[in-house]
Image 1 (cartoon, helix red, strand yellow):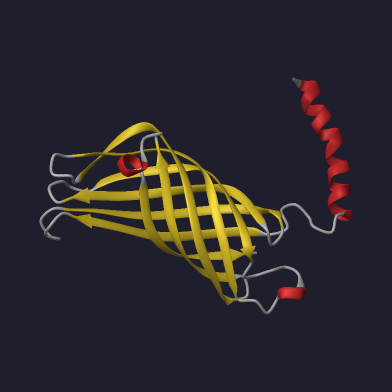
Image 2 (tube, rainbow, N blue to C red):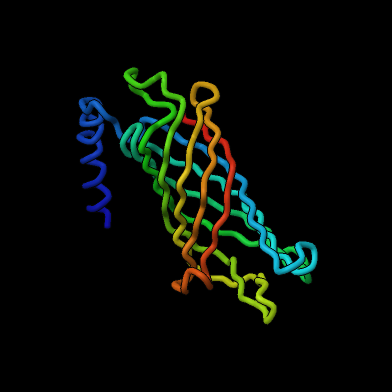
Length: 196
C-alpha cells in the first residue's frame, strides 16, 4: 500500500509540469450552482387529487476541459406530497458531468462577447426518494434507502454578469430500472451558476 502512495507522489511533479505546458489546463474553472425545480400533476380537479414535488439542487465541480466539459458532485433535496399526505422530505446525492455545446462565460477571448450557453448534463445519484401509485393514479411518496437515479438535463444559460449565469433546464431522471411511465421523474428548473 505504501508503495502505491509513494508512486503517486513521485508522479505529481510530472503532472504539474504537464499542466504548465498544456494550453488547456485541467481544473482551470470552478462551477458552483444551485437550482429550484417544481413539478405538479392532478387528476380531474387540481385541488382535490394532486401531487406536488419541489427540488433544490446544489452542485460544485471543476472544468475537465475548459469551456467544454465539467464534472463534480451534487445533492438534491426533495419535498413531495399528494392531496392526502403530509410533506415527505428526501434526498439524492452523487456525481454529475456537464457538456457545453455553447459556453456563456468562455475563458478564451475569441467568444467573450457570447452571453448564451447550451448545456447537456447527466450523472449518477443515490438517495431515499421513492413513490408508487395509488388506486386513483396519484403518486404516494415515501422514503426508501438504496434507490438509484440517472439524471439528464437539457438547458440554456444566460450570462448576466461576468462569471454569473442564470439557467433554465428540463430535468429528467430514470429511476431504479423501472419503466419510464412508472418510475420516470421530470421537472423544469431555474437556477444560478457561478463560473470562477
